[in-house]
Every structure is written in C-alpha cells, then in structure tokens.
Length: 177
Image (tube, rainbow, N blue to C red):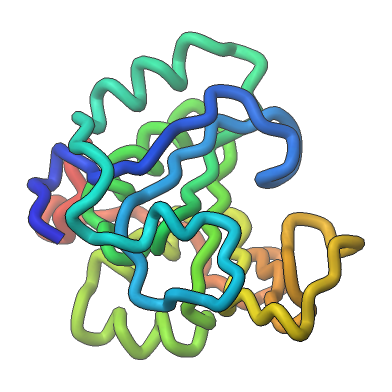
C-alpha cells in the first residue's frame, strides 16, 4: 500500500456499529485485501488502489466526537496491510481507555510470522484487545457466532493468552503519537 504513516487508505467508515465488536464501535473499513474470500461480505474493499486516503488525525477527531463509543474496530479489507497508520490510531484510542478490535483474514500464526519481517504488525497486535482471525469460508458459514461469519474464524483476546501483552512502545517502532 502506498500511504504514509499519517494516512490510511479506507473504503468506508461507520460512525456507530453494534455488530463489529463489543459495545458501540467506530468502524474503519480499510481498503485492500489479498485474501479475496469467496462470498466475502466486503468485496468492494479488495482493490488496494480503491477507496480514498484519510488522515489518521481526522479519524481520531471523529472518534473523539462520540463519548459513548466503547472503542474502535479495524475491518476491511485487510487491516494488517496498513499496520503503521492503524498503530497511530490504536495508540490514541487506548490512551482514551477504549478498546481496539481487529478483523483479519490472516490467522494469528500467520500474523506472527509476518511480524518477524514487519515489526509494525507486531506493534498493532500489541495494541489489539480482540482479534477475529482467519479467512471467511462460505462452506463454514454460521451466523449464530458473535462477530464472525464462519466457524473457522476465532475470537482471540489478550486475556486468553493468544495475543502478546500490552507493552510500551519506543519511537523507533514507527508508532507516532
């Protein structure tokens, strides 16, 4: 993706959602996805050149306008294609004592392997409270599952030990304040 650390390529934003994580959430649908899952709920997010660029400061400002929000959700598209600007946003959201939920077509195992080559992925994972991982598989569709579309997808939390513990970040990790 060709965006700076202060811009994010987005497909759309939903200012208030109750289906994309716990509580009332501000949802950023990122643009660009390598998974192209059959029967994807958001196929308009696949093209990495689609959508539009938005300053992370604009997203943070819009988030701050609603004190009732429980947190922010990054969906897509594939959020981990743009971990640098999402880290900037996630860090600000967590400073406000709100939660960060990320939907990814990658499994946590794949993300950990990718993070060895791209530290910003590990940084975004460390700022994530809930990760819904795995590609959507239409043959495993199950609409009774909270926050998921298919049975292979997992809801992973730091409390269950699937995510790394929250830690302080150093400026050289590329997470601007």
